[in-house]
Image 1 (tube, rainbow, N blue to C red):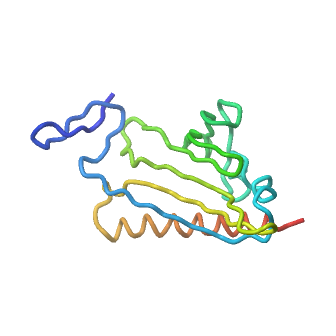
Image 2: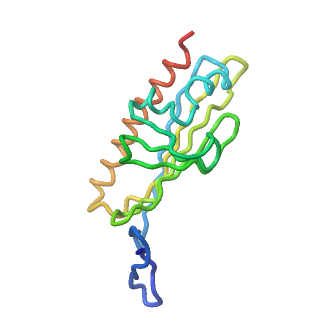
Length: 165
């Protein structure tokens, strides 16, 4: 197993399965959309851990867990693994684990239905990731933009699902 750690003189040292950057560049993407339905109703329609199949169009399978913290889902036929690391009645957070031989970008996501009134709410989708492995600012901007577009479209789909009677 290999991981990058910084030694006393700032030199990277490999010691775990994947690798991480000695100088990470963490980026946060926060997307929101208003929904004309109460938050609990919205969450009931789009907040299941494998509801991602409906609003992002990915195959999803729960491989372990009971739907709570510690539940593991695999997406796209096993290409992506995500572990639920946080949960409330109207939210969940997940992380992608280290994979051997692949840059570990500390990818985390958090989705929440937040009440904004008695009959309205807001969906908030936040992603955090390290882009330091990308070659230049243009590549970093492109990676951020592609996720903003993809998850922005997912929020529009969630709104459509949530507002349908």
